[in-house]
Length: 342
Image (cartoon, rainbow, N blue to C red; front, side, top):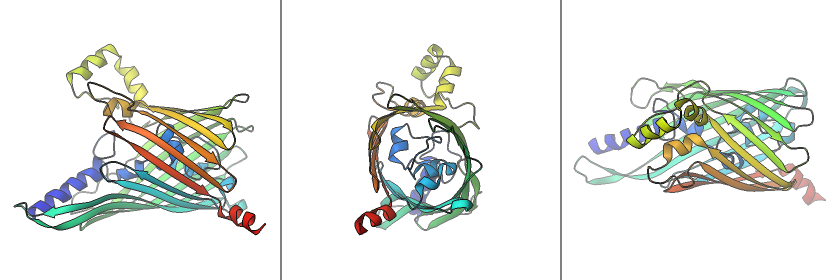
């Protein structure tokens, strides 16, 4: 029993802080994971892009619009140490009533060996977390849209479970030429309804994000700039003497400012193909090693677009020890059915 309780304590710690880069005080931090291959390739965060990509509605519910009508998005991420996660979502346009989408996201920690206090193996157990997504958006006028995403959550770590919910509120804007767009999101407002083992209820990973994207009119480039954790000023910390020395060389204000920013650029030589690259300074600052940073914090990807299907791939470097690979498939079954009939 002691071994089991120790193992469960480890997984509670993982669910609380394993994926958070700003501390360990939140539950359901898996809600911050990046599913979309496009968003992953642009640095991991984006709330401003406007396109037919249904996955963007998870990042900002206000980005759900009528162009995504009857789209189905499937996402899979091969993460680290046998962990994997994904997202499936489907959308419909209600014309004058707005747009809706529903889906589910999951995080699978895998299977683990169970042992008693003496180290005797007694079996195995699993750990996973999941959340539903119920998204609604409505155009305020031809340039402004508002949206909401309601996310009931269930977390199951061996025989311990927790229930809760989170809500995203988002707003988006784009100019009439659709060359410039912007967005702001209040993410993961909610609470833990039931805790794992009677401990005090934790906080959901609340975050305020804002950003803008701009596409050049006469060149195949689109730039995106995103600000993260606007609700928290100081994202810096000091772990070692080398970092203390580095912060003496670089003013703390500038270092902290860059940790709030994520930048990305897309190269779109044709409407059916894009390449992208991104940079996340907070990820690079927190996960680099003292001796070598390598490609930590950088990401890249590409996508192939067709009328009935979009295939995307994103590669994000988290550490010298490894990277994540995101695969996204966005299908439009109604268009495929029409083509097959014809």
